[in-house]
Length: 106
Image 1 (cartoon, rainbow, N blue to C red):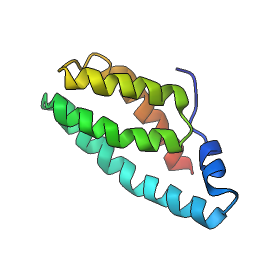
Image 2 (cartoon, rainbow, N blue to C red; image 1 turned 90 degrees about the horizontal axis):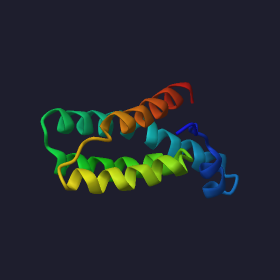
Image 3 (cartoon, helix red, strand yellow; image 1 turned 30 degrees about the horizontal axis):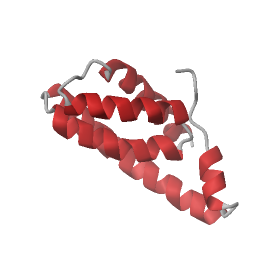
């Protein structure tokens, strides 16, 4: 997936309200690292059902950052984790890294 995080969806959602955009972005910046850490810990420990729940929460951040393809990927990955199949972890981790890099610059 070559898509990059962006604020297009956030701009649409806010209707141009910069204060709302800043508040929502602040929430993403605060919550994303914590949710990413919990996901990684669950994957490492083999808690794939819990990791699926973490992916479900992370999908909201994926969506807010305009990653439509990644969102669809995360939906599939979430279901696979519920079936104890973590094969897509490396690809999902690449999405998380893109998001982390973007958040750090925003």
